[in-house]
Structure formats: C-alpha cells, structure tokens
Image (tube, rainbow, N blue to C red; front, top):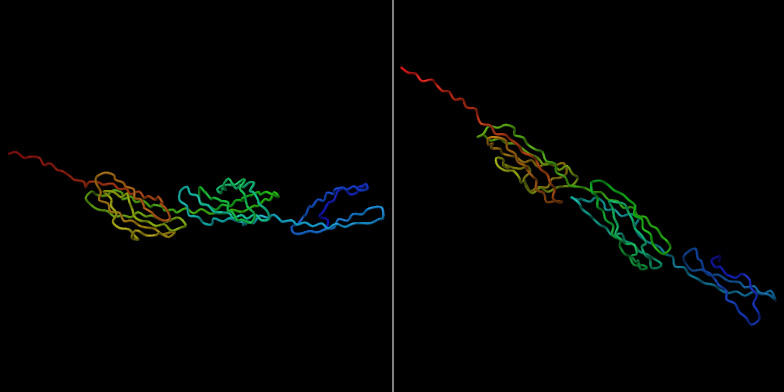
Length: 275
C-alpha cells in the first residue's frame, strides 16, 4: 500500500536459524490500512506473503473561527470575558501557547490539558481603554502534531455620554428674580437614565425639569432644567450635576453664574437757610 517500510531488504538465513524483520508503519491519512509483505527466497524461487494491518486515529482541534464581543457598553475601566470552546479529538492534547494583542487578552493556558473528545474553554478578555472598534488575531498552538489555530477576536466599546450646557445670568438687580435653563444632552450612542439634579445651591434653585425626572434620555435627547436666580450682591456660581443610574454612573455638570447689583440711589443734601 506504500504505507509500510520494511528493513532489511535482503539477508542470508543459515539453516535452523531465524531473523527479526522490522516493519515501520507511517500512515499519511487517518483510517484503517492494510498491506501485504512479500518475502521471496532462494533456492526454489518461491515467495511467502504476510498480511499487515494498521489504523491511524486522526488528531484534530475543533474551535470557532471567531470570537465576537459585539457592542459592549462600558463605563470607566472595565473588562468583559468570553469562553472560547476547544475540543481536541483523536488523542489527548495540550495547549502549548496562546497569544493575542491588546485590548484583548488570554489567560496563562500553556500546559493546559485537553482530554480526548472533552470540550473545554479558554477565557478571552476585552479591556478597551477608549471607545472604538477593535480586531486582533488569537494564535493557539497544540501538541501533539504541532497544530496551530488562529481565531479572529473582535469587539466594540460604547461609552455613555452626557454633555452639560451652562447658564450665565449676567448682571441682575438685587431684590428681583430671574429665570434661565441649563441642559444635559445625551451625546452617546446608548440611552442614559437621569434620576435628578444636584449641586444647585442658593441663591439658585431648581424650578422644574423638562421632561420630569427620573427620565431616560435616548441618544440626542436633552433634559432642560429651569433655574431660578434671586441674586445677592456680588458674583455667585453653582455647579448643576446630573445624577444617572443606567447603564452606569455618568458624570455631567453644567456651570451656573450670576452677578447681583444694587439699584443706584441719589442722595441730595440741601443747604440750610438762616434768617
């Protein structure tokens, strides 16, 4: 069959003697193989056939071509993980090495055993420091047979964002009341739930919000906060802060300023008259 190698090719055997013949089996494909070893001998120009049989169990590694984290909403320094399923077939295997570039990561799995036919998982992590889409190649090497597999890993980070719109009342007369609005705009790609407004202190106060809070702002939506200002003399300021709860705590602030001025007063002193 071409799968068997026999040595030596020729030899002289003395009477009542015997020799051992080494037969090597080197299959190039999986499955069962058969062959016949023909021995020709002299004198008498005869031959003797011996049947040879062997079977190779193929070694293979079954795992996905890709690992996709999809769109992941993250706030601050965050990490998400997924298990990459791996099944070694045909024999027991071992992970020799695994490596991937950031922002993806893979644990120290070198030397991890892979029992024949048993699915196991390798943890792959995604830790992006900024928004954006990412793709890298995860390379894994296995033993026996020096098998190397490559898996494409992808992920996109989405960060919730609110932008504050400040308010400057300018100069206002002490004793009068002025009204104005600050805003908080959802400039991100996911909804944000605003629970309330804090940080507005005297001589400012929150009069109302539109829409009423709590409320969820879709991307592009704005919550407007009406501020009432009863100025005291001099400059005053406060920082309005939106309190959020979903999908996480998002910091957004809007500065409120104003200056109170006293009304001008003219005092006249009349001269006294003497008779």
